[in-house]
Length: 438
Image (tube, rainbow, N blue to C red):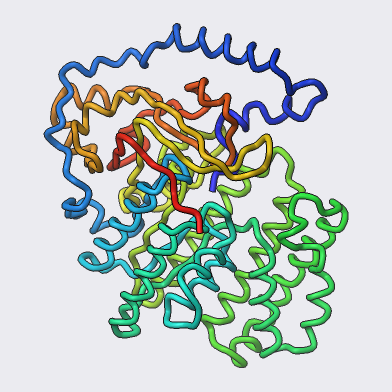
């Protein structure tokens, strides 16, 4: 997930300084926003001749454009809208049922997704518990549970070779990764369980943002040594388990190593995270590809999926995937008109509803379709559409973190980007509604 909105990132340092909070600062920000909006208008893009002839209802979109690709990215403009989760589910269902995709990777905790993966492969539990295991509050929703339940039910009706595997590609949580790593070591190297447990004790989900930096640094070093030790003893561990179970256990150790390093990375946090998420996707693609499941679906925030990396000053996950896979990476972005979403209130820390209005120039491209899908290359056959899609415009973007007064600042919930450079296709929702918390 994107931890904070683009605006929050820009203001993060001043926000921690004495005297930042207060009505005077808010009035200043609103005045600046007014000047910016007057100066830029709606982006200066002429949409008078833009047509909606290329739009297809998402439910009827064949997705043949994405079907031949090895990696398909599905973005969401906000983490807290039900329509984007439902769109993700519709796309996953079609790619699985009709186009042979058998791997789904979510912007979720690697260890938590492994626990959810046990359920979708036929294990005990419930879809709701599996959704909660993914590691972030934004996944504890009815809509995410519905997606997981669908994968579970699909798998129950097919042969093992056709089952859908579920992964997470984030590394910000520790508990589930430690649990599964220690379980593996208990089987193949019991003498290592206690030392590893003690050396990684400082890494917990509960203390992720409050733990003493020296303890985290020591735990990160211990995790790094463990990765090296496991790699050196690969043959021994594989002989006591299997090549796949060893690879998964090693990745849990690597996830702990990366997560600990993130905690003390300061201003490099976001850039390191995106780089490591891209590496995690490469690892998943290689592991699954070696077993004949070469096609992978990657789902996360637009900012991570976007090929151009417009939301960040560093090389984002999407830009890295575009470099690695070239034309074999197909990115589907999302956009909204008006959005009521659920996010963490950066003031109180509570989860609550917010509403923003986005006067998107893309609206005319989608006409009156309530959930429309447009392939950008096909839409660009019309000159006016091509000019629009090749222009720099503001597209909606809200991460995990918001404040009420941001709703008055268009640039606090939008990102300047060129749609044709960022995405291969876009799903548009005129009025997006909030997810349903479990």
